[in-house]
Amino acid sequence: MEASLTDVPGVLVGQVTRRGGGWLTGVTVVLPPPGTVAGVDVRGGGPGTHETDALDPRTLVQTADAVVLTGGSAYGLVTAHGVQRWCAERGQGFRVGPGEGDVVPIVPAAAVFDLGRGGEFHHHPTEQMGYEAAAAAGTHVERGVAGAGTGALVGRRFKGGTGTSSVRLDDLADGLVVGALAVVNAAGLPTWGGPPPGEAPGEADGGTPGGPGTALNTTLVCVATNAALDPAETSRTATAAHDGLARALDPVHTLADGDTAFALATGQLALPAGRAERVDALVRLQAAAARAVRAAVVDGVERAEAVRVGDLLIPRWPG
Image 1: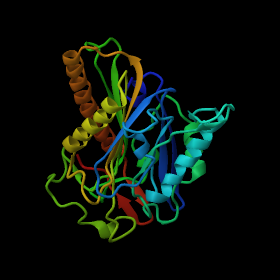
Image 2: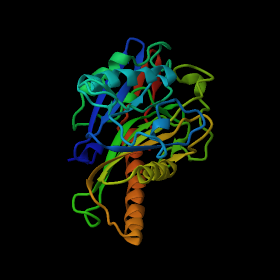
Image 3: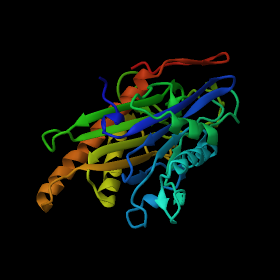
Image 4: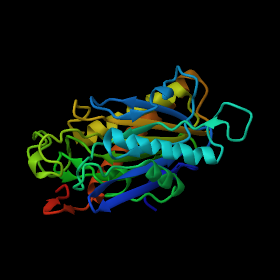
């Protein structure tokens, strides 16, 4: 069985993909078990995000009910409302009253820029697509041109996509897993195969859907583990996830990217309690997160097939 974010027990992924008729976009939703601690680290200079401030370890709420990765730039963030509606119908959320439905689902989200890549600028993800992605969640993750990676590019001229991977750390704790899912829509180029990584990205912008000036990008990542982490440790794991981006893409975290990493800790397996032993365990877990992210980026790019939009063919990365 292929390594996946859903190797973390209880973590599910749902996706909606829209292709053809002016569409080339989609939504990816990560649904963790109830009580999952969440963190985030936003590194890009052009982020499009929703409710990420709620994941600061200094704030009231420590958990998230879902994480949404979406196409459509800022327009696509409305998909989080559809996921909130799906969660609320099931009584999942931060309880604010005595009634069964008196909850506020915590659904942070981040978007990639893919506007116009299917041919129609205003064909971007909707609230209903977010709802449908949540309803479709399961253990199988469609890779390549799927979900939020449907309209993704790398270097603004090769096809990007959705990828996933996982790393096992059984020697640290029996059954410990760190998984990653990446939506690869980077201004930079992959560091393996193809043109040299130092080549300036975007030289062929006029030949990509959307035409000249379509300069915004973004790679989104969600990592998850079944370790028990507190909010600060979970946020630090999101920070470590960015190391995987830096190993796989060059450049990253540019002014033209909204690179964002989410982290989830389901709390099923305890790490050592002693200070020195716990630090060592966290270093190893967070290093594994970086490895899983790099592998997920490679998976997303290599699974992405060429896509034709009208008379334009968006080629695969030649690596």
